[in-house]
Structure formats: C-alpha cells, structure tokens
Image (cartoon, rainbow, N blue to C red; front, top):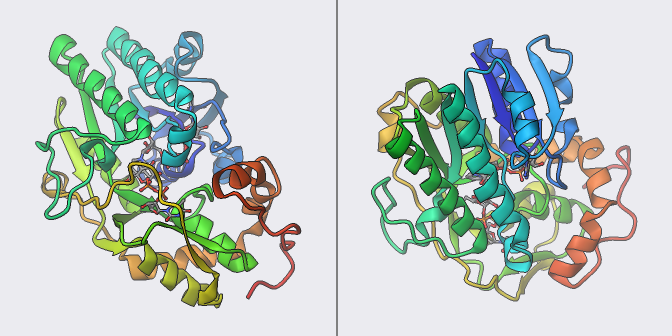
Length: 343
Ligand code: NAD
Ligand code: DAU
C-alpha cells in the first residue's frame, strides 16, 4: 500500500511509519505541519528509505493535501493538537486542526474513494469510575482537546453513513515510549528526575490512566487498517492501569532520583479521574498488546537517558517558556550535555 500518514512527524505516527516501512513493505508519504510537537528528527532513520517521502503542510490546507495524496491508497490521520493542558490554555488550534483538518482529509478521501483511518482517543468517552468503555459507550468529552477529537470522530462516522466512505476509527488509551514530547506525564517526569527538577503531580495524583506502549498502539492501528470493517470504531487499550503517583514513584526508582522531588501542585481544570478501555473488538481482529508497563517504562527511561541529542534542543528551546507558563517555575538553568553522566 502507499499510505498518506498525516501528523507522522509526531510521537505515535513516527512509530507507525517505521513499522509500516520496515515490517510491511508499504510506501509512506508523511504530511506534517511541524508544530512544536512535530519533529523531522523522529523520522531521521527513515529518510534514506526508497519508499519514504516527507511533505511539510497542514491538513486543513486543501492544496497541501491535494499534493500529498496523489497515488495513495489510504489516509491515516494522526495529525492533531494533543496536549490537554494546552487545550485548556489556548483551544484555538485544536478546533482548526481536529475539525477543519479532518474535514479536508475526509473530502480528499471521498473524491478518490480512499480507505480512511482516524486515530482517536479514549478521552472522547470522558471519565469512568468503574469498569471500561466499549465502542458503544456515549461520547462525553471533558476538555477542549477531547471535545474536538470527538467532533472529528463524528465527522468520520458521518462520511461513512452519508457517502459510504470506507472509514474506520481507532481509539487508543494513554501511550508511552520513545520520542514522546516532554510535556506529557511520563517523559516530563523522566527528564525532570534526570535533571533533579521538581516532579509536579496534579492534585492527589490518584487519577488512573490505562497505559499502552506506543508500538502496541501502532500495531493496533495497522490491524484496523488491514482488517477493520468500514464504519466501525475500534478501542485499543493497554494491558495495565496505574495511578499517576505510582508511575512517578517508579520513575524516581528507575532514574535514581530522590522522592523528595515529588511535589503535589494545583490540579488540572476538569481533570478526568480514570480512563479504561475494553479492546475486545480489535482483539477479535488478531491484535493483542505485547509490552507490559513494568518493562516498557524501564525501556523508556533508558531511551531518554541514552538520547540526550533528541531532548536537549527541546528543553533549551520554546519548551522552557511553555513550562514556566504551565508550572510557574523555571527548569534547571543549564541542561546537562549529552556527554555528562546522568544519575
Ligand atoms: P504528537 O503531538 O506527538 O504529534 C502530533 C503531530 O501532528 C505533530 O507531528 C504535529 O506537527 C502534527 N500536526 C499538528 N497539527 C497539524 C496540522 N494542522 N496539520 C498537519 N500536521 C499537524 O501526538 P501523538 O501523541 O503522536 O498523537 C497522534 C494522534 O494519536 C493524535 O490524533 C492523538 O489525538 C491520538 N492519540 C494520542 C494518544 C497519546 O497518548 N499520545 C493516545 C490516543 C490517541
Ligand atoms: O488517554 C489518551 C490521551 O492521553 C491522549 O488522547 C492525549 O493526546 C495524551 O496527551 C494523553 O492525555 P492525558 O491528559 O491523559 O496525558 P498527560 O500525559 O498530559 O497526563 C497524564 C496524567 O498525568 C493526567 O492525569 C494528568 C497528570 N499529569 C500530567 C502532567 C503533564 C500530572 O500529574 N502532572 C503533569 O505535569
């Protein structure tokens, strides 16, 4: 297949691109706007591959999409503004990318009769105290991020029902692994712990997330692309649930940092308490997660410890001012160099 992967310079899409090129022999065209979260470095090992092409452009830009989609058999849409805290502070780009962007991609797929796969999130269901969300659970998004993702999912469903577009949606739980931008819980805590910076836990830290390793989510998306039924939604949840405070304590152990770095800070507005997904439908297609949190987290800590080249430019750039706005304090002034020993 020749796949148009939108937003694949980000965390999950770059893992998906690598798996499709290296394990499935697909051709891959990446269309990415390269926002603060999109980084060509995430694809750097794929650039020499004959089946790989990269185009910089926004999914809400019809001309950019027209140019990228030529000759493609399917569109997989990863492109999104993805950080809940940023959606609370500045929702504008979330509406444009999620809603307008998805609409433009759906139109491009409809004109050509292409297979379409929307990458979505468990957050569209809202928070659940007990049990797990199935694909039939109502959509009750809490944040501007999840509301705009739900809006995009509804548009995708409408293109199947109205126009017969062969479109499916795959909703994942919280991903973790290498190449994740350090605004998200796990990489933020790892890098702060390695630098001896405070570890800011929102509220009581007892919020629960359903963690999935990024390669497991990427494989679930591939499974839906190949074997999923048009018009269906597929949940892909990880094998482990964990309270935030337990994740942070484990990162403290793995990095050799001191537990006194943990600080409980003001809670996120409208903070969802617990996410949990039932994944029976995608399991029936032959998918199962392979990575348990205990091992995957240790590997993720090791990756960040060994790949300062990847995160140093982030920590010394615009991320610092984001961090000060969000957390009201500066990061350690002088980041360690790649050669300096980390604890
Ligand atoms: P990310 O923030 O790492 O990457 C998003 C990518 O989209 C970046 O490369 C960015 O440059 C690009 N992008 C943003 N706006 C764009 C636009 N208008 N046009 C083109 N490109 C644009 O995100 P991620 O964590 O890799 O998430 C990918 C997808 O998976 C998103 O749709 C997200 O909602 C979904 N998802 C994420 C998680 C998670 O835990 N990270 C879980 C479930 C679902
Ligand atoms: O559930 C899937 C979603 O997971 C994706 O759709 C989103 O794109 C992705 O960002 C993620 O959303 P969360 O809000 O769950 O992830 P985040 O890493 O921001 O936060 C995880 C939990 O940790 C959440 O309960 C908030 C908490 N947290 C987060 C940060 C950044 C803290 O306690 N302190 C922090 O500094």
